[in-house]
Each structure stands twice: as structure tokens, then as C-alpha cells.
Length: 79
Image (cartoon, rainbow, N blue to C red; front, side, top):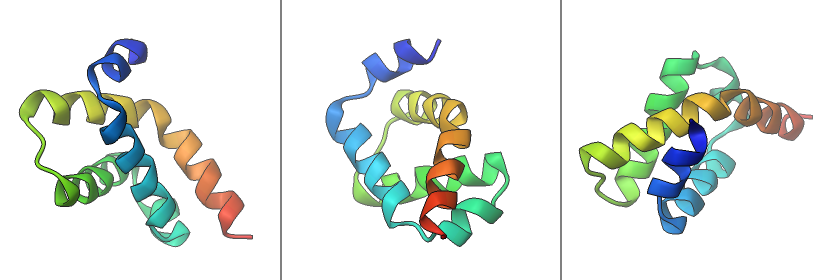
């Protein structure tokens, strides 16, 4: 399922998304619920470039599948 959404996202969106993850304080990433985390990162991405409905849906689905990875990365940075 997630491979389809990734194919529909261009490399710029993916780079910007993971850059937003890296630049967001670990404490924020760790304290947000899954839905809040997705919303927060979508807002950060939307501040960088406008997203249409399809892109928002694709990025949301992608992020929901990556919340554990995002939290693991944030946890590793907090040490």
C-alpha cells in the first residue's frame, strides 16, 4: 500500500518531509499522538510548498506508515 503513495510523491516532497522530521525537536515528535504528528509534519511541509489534495492524502498515508520510524529517529537523537 505505501509503495503506491511513495511513487505518487516526487523526490522533492520526500526530501522536504524528512528534512522537516530532522529539524523538528525530538521532544515534539515524541510527545505528539500519531494523528498530531502527521498533522504537524504536513503543516511543516505545507509551509515549504503548497500541496494539493492528492499530495496531502499521499503524504498523510505515507507518514502514518512511518510514525514508528520517526519516533525511533527522534528517540535516538534525544540521547
